[in-house]
Length: 305
Image 1 (cartoon, rainbow, N blue to C red):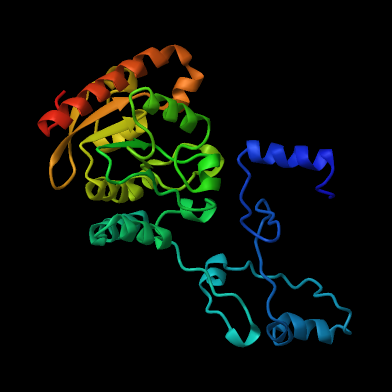
Image 2: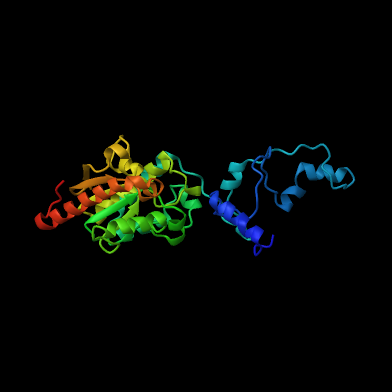
């Protein structure tokens, strides 16, 4: 297909809108087939009973009625690579969710700085989202800021740029921060899940649980005075609140960073506000409360609700 044609560009745009924006393999795989197989090396074929049977049948090139055994997919993925043949390294066996969660907790606990935490996330393989995302979306802004905003997960634009909240919702967040005297030099921004889920789908509870130790450690290391949860998922994950964002927004909650207790505020996610503009008035009230709390903390050294 000529990708310079209008039809080809429209097809690619359709795939991107549908969430198919990551290449997972060099060749297509028919996953609806009855069996998945991998061609055996030539020397294995020559020594196989099927090959001997074929030779006895007049070297017709056909295996006749010999039935081929289904290939064991697990054995292919775990089979050691033969360096002499230049084969790629075998894929590592998938870890269980429990093992991934324990590894995440251990890795997050060992990070002594935000740079170390980012480096650990760059190499962490316990979350499957890492394989489909273009890159890690760690944070943006100043870690020394007194306020930290946390959303749910990156979107397409964030996946491309490597920074959180840079799409339409990010532009709205910039305007909301500017209205109370904040910008990306006076705020710290991150997500609970640092990798984009395929097609911008909602992260699964398992994916969120595996990423939770990292964002908790990130908040602890950044040590803000105020934590702002953008949207219901971030609020429920970090604050343990079961109520929806509509009932919980505008309220102050305690949050234990691990070293001290700070105030946390829940408000609407900018993406929700783009879909429901009438709710912006409530978000404006929340940001005014945030501005008041930051002003009070600057005078007294503590954040009042």
